[in-house]
Image (cartoon, helix red, strand yellow):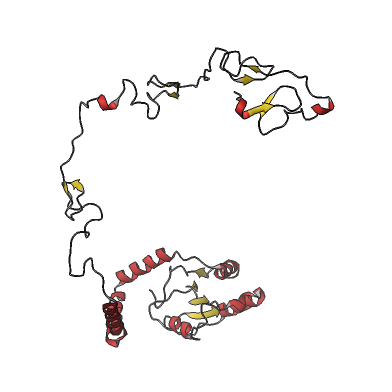
Amino acid sequence: MIKLNRRKFCECGCGIVIKSGNRFARGHNNARLGTGKSKSPPQHCACGCGQMTNFDNKYINNHHHGKFIPPPIPNHHPCACGKCNKMIASNLKFAHGHNRSGKNNWENKVLKHPKPIPNYHLCECGCGRLIASDKRFAKGHLFKGLKFSGMTGKHHTKESKKKISQSNMETKSKNEFKLKVSEITKTKWNEIKYRIDHLEAMKKALAIKPNKPETQLRNRFLYWHPNIIYCGDFSIWVNGKNPDFICEELKKIIEFNGNYWHQNDIPGEREKIFAKFGYDTLILVDEDLLDIDKLKIKVDSFMERVNPYENNKIIGGI
């Protein structure tokens, strides 16, 4: 279909109707040199719709029956409202929003089996909203209208806020308060169930994975010493600490301490913690990864040397 307000004639003079944004029909840009098609005026569609078509077409597409007839769509039928020619799927009776027109007005119908409506009452918070009879408050209105204290719905002054802040700081800064919290935490930590649940929750929340240096070391250890496994994902605990790599057969632990995250660590503290449970510890830093040959020699010598803490028979664990 071609409309005059959106189309124009080809500038070569052939008489073909084209889009308003183009100058020539396809292949007609050389018409000025005498190679264009012969001039023929456009004509109206023979169905009487008043739209323009090219000189070599008598009808616009699907207008040969006197009016536009949409092409048939498989498994479709016209809407049952009777006021439109919209084609819809065979499993539907009306197009969207057309069931209110004509005889099929849902407002005039009476339901044979109306659904039961539960009893309603006002929300107890005082908002005026109607809710079901089996509920006391609307959603989120439980603490809206009830006053449990004299400060509900009020705000503290700046002076009272300072007093509350100072009292909290003094309480938390007291040694008695710190000792009390420490004793409660130690008592809970001695319970195996609490300890395992706490560590499992940390493992899931942090979703710890080996970083790039640890991944590089793990790949090297697969070829050098396959009995060294990665356990930095909270899978193994020794004396309350989680090592990076461990060899249970030889009671060896390898730790990787990056210079940035472990710059304030006390030298030898990590080794003493693991030595109580009979583990010999090797600490690797960022500079050890620069030379792979020296790194292999260092790891090999550590694995071959005798474990001086092997006689420490304290039972290891979490």
